[in-house]
Image (tube, rainbow, N blue to C red; front, top):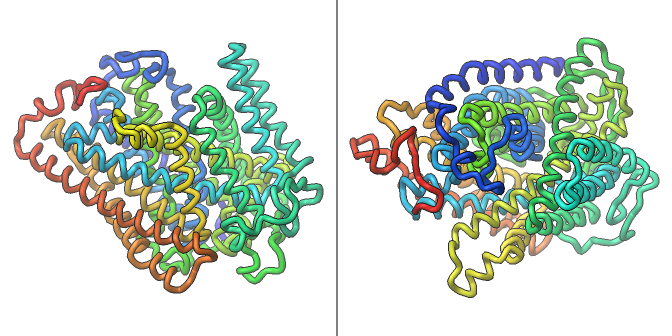
Length: 630
């Protein structure tokens, strides 16, 4: 057994070295210059291009990228392969892979007038490459919706008090939007009041927990909204009807949130989420260190096992005692896990955030680059923001490894995060139930943020793919309600397979492949910029991530899902169809990867072969296109 404090210290040490040393080198490498006008100033419009102070933009960027994936991925990997490989991949991979990815995505976008990575690749390899990358990102968004809806259903089913707190949190975000943008009332007193009410919502949840349908061993006093029933819902056969109902409600919520104006929910919710994020992540890291140094009193926690019947248990609630802040699960469980598969490639796609995430390139080049006040701010926001998400991944590992029995099934490991995180927070005098409910709210708030933000980004991507609609079909699919509806239906159809071991690796493979393609975009930019620019910093992680993701997607599309279909490993017709759909997505993604890499490789060869790059990329550090230029 190892004191979990050392896990936190290892990560803090590698992250510090990365930020102090490597990020400084990268800042000089891309020639960050505060005298160069950023897109936020050059095209300031008060809506999208808005110069923002560094701490404010860091908060927005951090809350946008730090969703539920850096919690779910590390927990799943630690349960499957042991906490040692999970820790090493986060502590080493984050500063060398993920932080480089985020920093380069942000920097390249700033040098291309705040445009997306799809637009950037189009500038070098043409419209065909741009459309291929946008389609790749769009399919990845569908997988995000499916994976996160599944997770939200698990957590709200396991913690009915967190379900109440989450409903209150969404309601408060809506009211905060009215307070700020309709009533135009002062920000500071409103922020203090609404943040306080979010935390008070935890207490309300403890008094009035809610469930949609009844399930065995609900906490005493739980308000069951629809009583018995719900067996007809997809997933109800594998899990329970309450979990299945929460998945359905989540997809409906994401649809509604993605079509609302940003001031109604997205902006106020991001602010409230950031307050939960800083409190939860900082509190658990400090608790691990303080509890080890100052002493920890054993506490009893409940571990919820969502598929308890399949695990051969007598009920969904299993009691466990956290005796000390030391690892209670194996550091190494073997190279092959029965559900996920071999460590290579599945460790590297299971931890789909926390180490590296393609979704971040969409945020960096979608909103953050349009708000950067000075070029030098990219170092803290791009590189440093990713290190912050790595700390969230570390807290996830800390929370699961201190609870014995947390690895009884991957689903159990996932919902152990609130129990383990709550046990850590008892160091500060909180009760276990209240602390677990708070961490459950933290988890769900991240997941909700990621889910509806992803659906909104997916809407934008489809609109960009179609362009100016000319036919009735094009006008229909670019309508925001129809567009969001397509994403919601596709995501729900995928999640209906009911197997976390199927959903998460496919999402992870797509997301990590998108990260590889974002690194490819940065490499193409550097190659066209100057012959003296080395391509190792982006090229080495690019090659590794391409190998990982292509192998993972081929295993899923060609072997795993077809094998599951032939073995009858599904609980309904829709589950079988979902597995077929997943295989099709995996194979299409591989085809898009090959196509984009081929086009980009040709461009790099030409650029480094002596073509006149000034005619391609302009001056002043690799890019001078105007918004709207073709």
